[in-house]
Length: 279
Image (cartoon, rainbow, N blue to C red; front, side, top):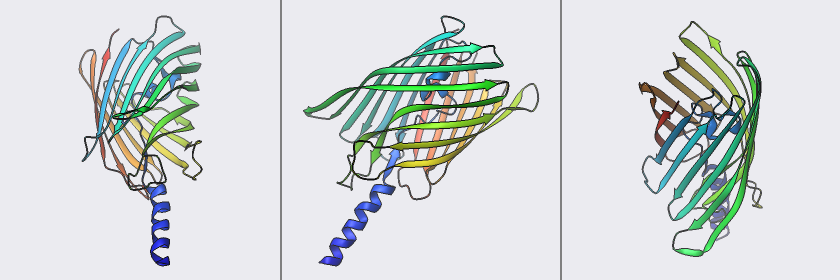
């Protein structure tokens, strides 16, 4: 009996460390504005983007993102973003209104952005459990020609293993990401941009130690600005690849694929997206 209880306890605490997934937009390395408001319309474009992503084996685990970037002025831009996440019978959504300021010129500048809006969490068919709150997001980065240094604060949905009763199945983690990148222009058409990121996210409302902290290496390959490939390796977390291709003058199609590595266990995640340049 004691041995069975001990095994059960060890299993539960093991699941709390391996049965979690931060729900990133799968194409965030191509569409930086989905996680960092300082990148909203950084190239002074009017743009709309949409992403739908789903688990490999369960359509009940889906996320949808829609965002618009509007550069009304040279140094000032605005954005609006809506995301909705489903995890079995749990639902979570965010609506963010954003602004971005840019100081400097095209090759040497400082950019800062912030977002604010409501968030809603509920369990289907249980209206009394609906909770509505306010969320914030902030980011800033400094670019000097090909060198960029920055970071951002964010809140991300987290899917926890349904077998673990000690954790809420769908919750949110607060945290930050810092990054450093450099762009190598191999010729007039082709560039490679390696990036190093540090991610630290945790559930501040839980008494259980469930921090997710990891380094991330990203490499972006860009051809003529029309085709882009991004490969992300998150240490002991996942590998995520994203591809973007311009199919018409103002339209880009995007696809990404993420698979867990190390101690984490979650289904592979696919996402498809489309981006419209309204300029």
